[in-house]
Length: 247
Image (cartoon, rainbow, N blue to C red; front, side, top):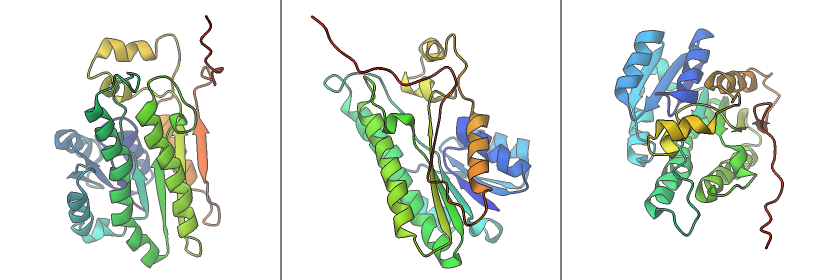
């Protein structure tokens, strides 16, 4: 199996690369931080191909996919993992640049990678696209505004992709994690480690390895089985009641 993973320099992406290489796959690991990808290659060996890539740059995505060496070119699994949340300010106070960066990464980056890889899958009549969504795409929370909107897009785009691919053997799945400890909160809070750590204080969050195992389980189902959507949370997390402001 040949796996193409975005956002592979840390967190979910790095864990997914490790999980699939342990299973004998070859992995194209892409991210903006090339030094981290080189460290991952040193750890995992020649079955990992590191590529510096910003998914927000459509031309760069197209070039990266077109230039893959033969032994990595016929992608069986695309994991659209690159994404981020920025800030928790209410909509009327937030920085518009944060909104734009989330849209460019979480929506446009996912679109660009899918559009670059999908034609090859259809031509070979095999493949699997796994998109990383979030419970925030279904359930609102204060400050989730555009981040939640981008993840709602991921959910609907995944379902529509599956509709477009009817009659082919290409599968599409979406994973919606709840609270999971990676660099997510560190990025959201602009590198404030204390603030990020406080998010997970007193609870046991999901881990990147949990998400990697979930991706692996989805992909390893028999070819006639398509897992549409998986939503998972830590046992200690649940859904909140509606907010009510009382006078």
